[in-house]
Each structure stands twice: as structure tokens, then as C-alpha cells.
Image (cartoon, rainbow, N blue to C red; front, side, top):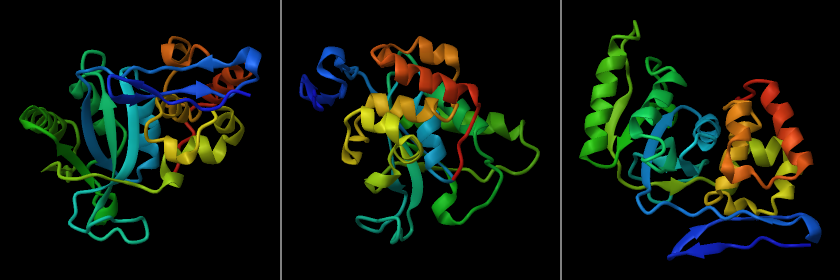
Length: 239
């Protein structure tokens, strides 16, 4: 059997090799773009955003975690004043920050007040993101009847959540597919393939998007058929 192989490209980590019998092994190499940027959003429970953004064209990696607070090294059981959030590494030449913002507003209720753990926040990382976030919020104020409670805050530090939260749907509800990737839970924050499959298996993108996704062209026929069936079921995300 072939085993997981990390590929390093110009000092940046990228992935992956899927585990198949030797005659069918396919190396998946995802080269990270030199101009890659990161967006950070909080929109309630972080499992759903991980799936939603992970399977978008132009998104290379996602990771769920905790940010926005002061507690050092928070955990799920000791969150302190942090908020559940998602980091999204994306190629701005393929998917713009504006498109990510549209997905942000469309896929949660920004008018609903929650406790700090599940609040709605855009954590901007530079002045451009701040300006775009402000403009998009003003636009949404004309769309939603109720007051938008989404906060806009400068990004500070992001703490990765525990391994079992990363790509939760893939590793918890689609274990056979997950095991075929040859990944360990600790690898999931860096895996482009896992990010994409975690979204596709719960119907967060279309069959056409899946079939045209160059990151997944080497999947076995069995795995492709399985993912297609999951997409056909429609959205299955939950928290």
C-alpha cells in the first residue's frame, strides 16, 4: 500500500497522496498560490462553514478554531471569551473576498443574537478587507428587515480547534471515504482534498462543480460514485 506523502513546494506545505492499492495510487499535489490570502468569519457553529467554504473553487484550505478573545490557548471545553470561527485560505484570482462575503451573508442569520461563542463576526485582516466588509454590511442592511448584529473586528490570533472538529462531516459521518484518503485527523487543517470532500459529501456545492474540480480528478470510481450520490441527496449539514 502507498502511504500519505507530504509534498513541500517552495517551503509551503501542500498535499496529498490518497491510499489505494499500488496499481491505483494517485498523487494529489495541491500547489498553494503565492498570492494566497486568508479570510476569517464567525457564523455560529463552525462545522457548517467548514463544509460550505471548503468546496468552493479557489479555496485551498480551511480550518475551524477560536478567535476574538483574550484567553491564551482556548479549547472547546474552556473557550473563555473567544468565538467559534473559520479560517479560509483562498486564491483571490479565482474567488474574490467579495464572493466569500456573499456566501457569509447568505448562509447564516446575521440578525440573530447569540452568546459570544456563536456570534456573527467578520474578522478583517487588512484595510481592504475592512472596507469591503463595511460596504457589504451596508448593502445587507437594505436586504434584512431586522437589525444586523454582525460585528466587524480586526483579526488578532486564531487558535485551531481540536482535531475532531476539523472536517467534521467527512471524518465522522463518511468514515469509509475519509479512511481511503490515508489522512490522520491532525493533517486535516492542511488538506485541500479533505476540505473539498467535506463540503461535497453534505451537498454544499453542485455535481457540476464536483465533476470539474481538478483537485479531485484522481478519486477512484467507487469514491466518485459515492460522493455523487451524497451530492444528489442535497444539503445535509447540521450542528
